[in-house]
Image (tube, rainbow, N blue to C red; front, side):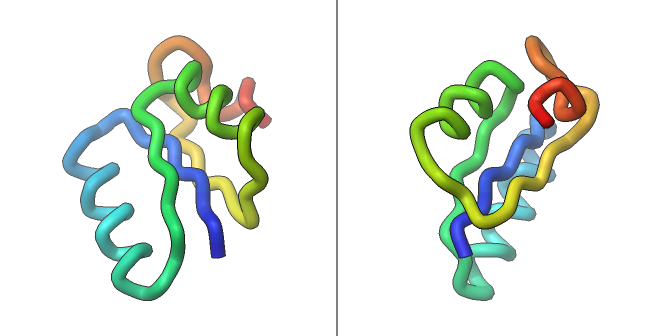
Length: 63
């Protein structure tokens, strides 16, 4: 499954990314809403996991 992850906490972002890759998923991770929006407009994802409180553009606005 191709997953878009939005998480601004670097330790949490890295932990979630490592786990999801370990179980066989492809992960694209963003650290802020602007970066996430760019990825979302360029690629198609099966699942998006968004932190709600992130810089520039929050997870709810991205939905």
